[in-house]
Length: 223
Length: 223
Image (cartoon, rainbow over all chains, first blue to last red; front, side, top):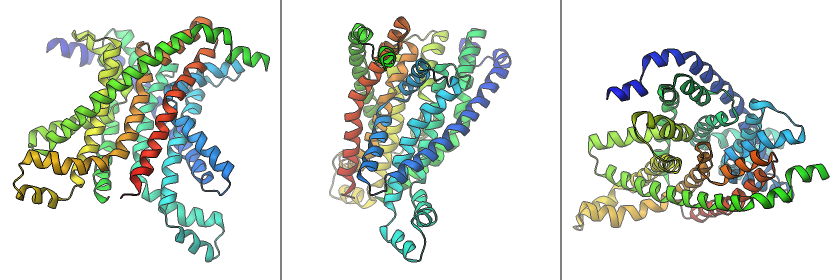
């Protein structure tokens, strides 16, 4: 028990590692604030593109979505981070992570939003158009608000996954929370920083998990 | 174009490392199957255990599931592989990855199965019990078959997402596709192996993504 406390819950070590962990936490937060809105915007574009009647556009969208859903995110990140410099495209760690996450998360958000748009009855669009709204206005003011509301649980669930996924940025040496924890572990030769990072993730993400659990039970109960 | 091909589609490098990638593919397949079997079996078991509604047991299940859903899988893998040895618990990289991903899948599938069990109307329970079936018989023969149908689409999607996380094993040097591709890349300083690895993932996972789509439409109209 004492060994456990000394290796995992060592407050002296934690005090030493705290500044590093805090810096890592801020980086994770920044990363989240960058990749979630970017991915959501990309997903919106994907979902809107998939509503057109043009067969080629639709096929291209499905191809894009399936391609990036089939890649494990870490594989995509490595391709971007290690492959692109050979084309003389240097994005840096943050830029590589942002690009890889954009490709991955926009596919997932896109699929969710597409399902949301499809869940809105056609009559809504027709009624909106017949009152004189343009196609764009009808989409923006009538269809999308309902579409988004219908898929709120899936959107939250995906956002939770994206936030958790930011931990893979540690692999390309972006100093986010997990990377900071590993660095602090190497410096102090003690596992407390890794455990502390886990606890930070837990404290930040638990409310989202609880919220989702409620949503899911209600959602499946409706079917 | 010649330079591009030399860099990204260098046949000599690809031919040299292709056997490694193939070897990695088998590791990925074995790891993914082991995760799916252990994760879903344990998740189903926990959801059935939860149906008995022992207060203390259910509290523990909910707690464990929440923790496993809030922590990034990579953090769990790293904690198993780098933190646990400091208190004398040692496991190989393969076991760390397998155990971490199985626990995550267990948590998600428990939630999904439990939501499915809750979705079966109470009248089904009462009717089955009143015909003289025991609690266990009711659960097994009446409730579970109905619950499982509802859970198939969300379970399929979640399982696919988690099996793709086998790529995270590369971080702790499990010899799966990404690890092989990455080490080939660092030996040859040529990104062709990364592309080859990416192709291996696409060959493995595109059919899986399509299967997921098919499952979604197949079970969608019966609601």
